[in-house]
Image 1 (tube, rainbow, N blue to C red):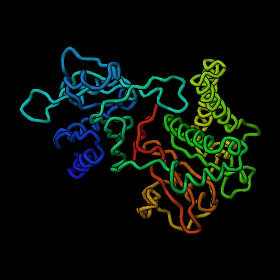
Image 2 (image 1 turned 90 degrees about the vertical axis):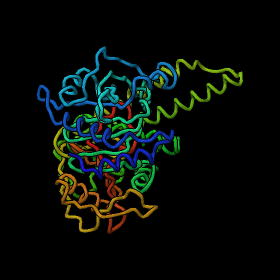
Image 3 (image 1 turned 90 degrees about the horizontal axis):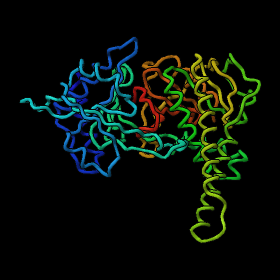
Image 4 (image 1 turned 135 degrees about the vertical axis):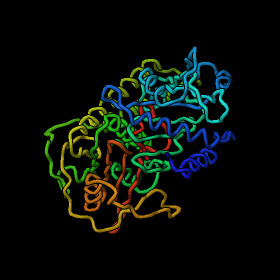
Length: 419
């Protein structure tokens, strides 16, 4: 079913990124895993697509993997054949975000005769900037394949995404544009005027960047298409072209003060812990930690408020201070006649034009908008694909990032397709 070149590319990507020297599984095994999971994901149970994650790991490997308690094992008394029917029966019992069905080579004569022998619970909760718990159970460094949306596969080596397949397209992941390149520059440039930035400097930027990442994760988890338009503060008063607002908010909360609260409390906690180590008098660290948890809770709730607004058809418009301005808005800028280029790796000149014909009106409208409004940033949410980021480079070029959430699995992240 999958072209042999795609299977070969997955193996190549595994071997290229493997740090432990562990080679990729044989070609027939990778092919069997990918095709069986993909076919299972095409089925529906109670009007919902079958969602499943599988990891290729032999039973004897599990007890020798790292410190005790790193993952939780559920072992089946009787192994099940690795088939589409078996996956459909077992999948509802396990959350694909936290648990992978454990698959091993069976006792058959062929190398690709696979069997399901258990399930491995590996929660990534506690690994995010705004998580209010510290637990984090890292997945085993084995081949893991997940289908969480119809027609979509995500392929991992442990925590790292090495390849994605969705809507008939195969792609490699790219670094998040928040940490480099033009999009990160635009965002950082847009918040330098914030009083919060002037008081907290790059600490504020790091929290701000992580908040945007968390917002996109929350918006993607809601499983609807849409767009988020980020406006520099000078445009937040209405001086922008190409927005037909539908639901305008007369008043709404800003997220920027919440981020500064976290910066301030984390800085106080670090100083307090330093005072403890050096024997100086200090405030109660436990009280500070509880205050930090409260800051994180309010930040997460603000992200959830914004993400929920994306469920209304249209674009959510937010200011650089993370204040929602309108939602369900229509982007109606004039046609952008410049180029739209993949902005994956400007340093290595790895740029090539985007074929907008292959995408829908949502992407085209966002391209037109950022093309006519320099300094703005757009995030386009797809129901069955990744989150595309857009920013204008100059008078002739709009940069396009096909995957704004980068390479690594994130706490609570739904793998939206995903390339």
